[in-house]
Amino acid sequence: HVHLVESGGGSVQSGGSLRLSCVATGRTYNSYSLAWFRQAPGEERAGVAHIDHAGTTKYIDSVKGRFTISYDSAKNTLYLEMTSLKPEDTAMYYCAKVGYYLGVGRKLNPKDYTYWGQGTQVTVSS
Image (cartoon, rainbow, N blue to C red; front, side):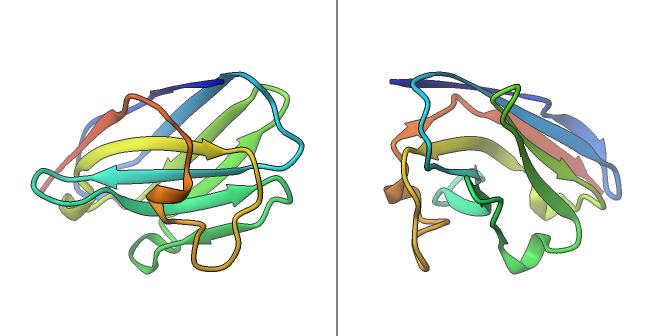
């Protein structure tokens, strides 16, 4: 079993920055996929950024150039550096992990992830 705990959310003004962290404990895998998802009120949970054991990353178009996903394997910690934040980035952010490689079309599909954190709220005001 894997336990994920997010932190780093908060309230910022438009154009501000935040760094989310997600610490993973428990079972480790040689191959894995990690991702950040977000869910705004009344909307479905949607993928934001993905990284795997090979360091391959993927982002949704709306955050490219503004968000950066990274993973520190020594600390078992996933990060999401968010800059130039916009009001439409407001949501609960979740980290997720699965213990194998995800192919094309699956990297940002929430149904393909096994383990989830409890979420951290990000609020961006205009």
